[in-house]
Image 1 (tube, rainbow, N blue to C red):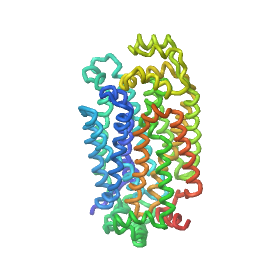
Image 2 (cartoon, rainbow, N blue to C red):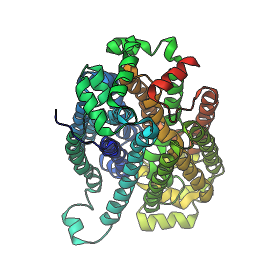
Image 3 (cartoon, rainbow, N blue to C red):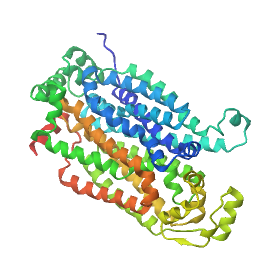
Image 4 (cartoon, one colour):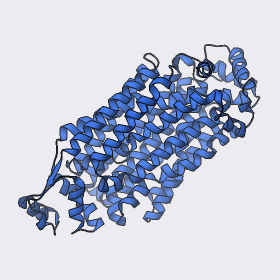
Length: 521
């Protein structure tokens, strides 16, 4: 085999580009909700199904991801995932009806396993001193994808409202949501091509007995240990761990006493990361901001701000994770997340909703909204009461089309309090829970079970995420924003309590040293 020089940074960035596409996919759909719901007359549950379809599919995909990774390797698995992204993006863009769109997005969800495979691959090629920084690139890619999508959605929305001739000729004004989804096709193709440039995981090659090729790849990465020393260390770990012999043995090992502490830590983080509601805010960003009464255009613009803040503080996490450590970042992040979510709860709890006679006349003249004269000057104490009153005179599709306008007119809320709470939560999540989950997943499990363990706990995280995405529109309209944010805040507190005594510090330790530390404790 001819020796080739590989940059560990280049490989990490290429692999993590799949996370960028995931973030793009997840956030692009947030901008289409209003348009798709209106075109296909969707209910809250149907909107939830459309948004959460990938989250449901990834649950099934993660059941076999570990097996596939161990059989054909991390690189080939990633190439297959990239092809699924391409297919799903094209099918979603040209979907002729709601059912086809949901199916196309469901298929795309099989590619969401790119997160767990990327964390696995990067964790296996990275030197211990920069592993946290490199695995964190996965989270950076996600938030950059989210941010890019919010910018794209806002730009396309603004274009659709313009009078430019070429906008009309390209149907951007009438097929707005299709243009939003179509953006994903190009980066998906680019990722597919780039993946052929990276080498196979040396740890996987050692598991398959291909030591000569593994040594050449390790040498090209210029690790601290010599190729011979690193191969010997990995082989020793595999020899003393019978779980590495088969997929079934690896899965059974997760229930052994030896891995009990690692499993509890991974399970807690997997649940808490999603139970704090991050994907309710990111996947439904414009919808969340419309609840404050700022209007559609401002809601899309605020989503852009969320994306930028997310990127900035994920970069902060990368700069700090190998210096400050995983534990201090995660613990402080959970505290700040819980406080900020409680602030959101207070803001929505204190809000009232009232339409004056003048406002009712104004929305009728400017937007053609009728049938709400009887609601003039009535004060509603919660968003649930206000929406329930509207439903008595409007159909679901009519309310969905008019909701942003009516909330903008009726809502009396301390916007600064809610916005502060949301932004602080975005900050807290992106410097702690977001990147650290994948770093810890890539560190706390031995090489022999990592191919099974990471997908298993990614499955659990994805399952919680699916339920958050699926039921958020329904909860917003039937439970109310205040109680939804209170539940998210409590989840953060529970997570902090559970992890305070269990979570070890793993910075600057090899995977084998972390394994020994967890077993000893």
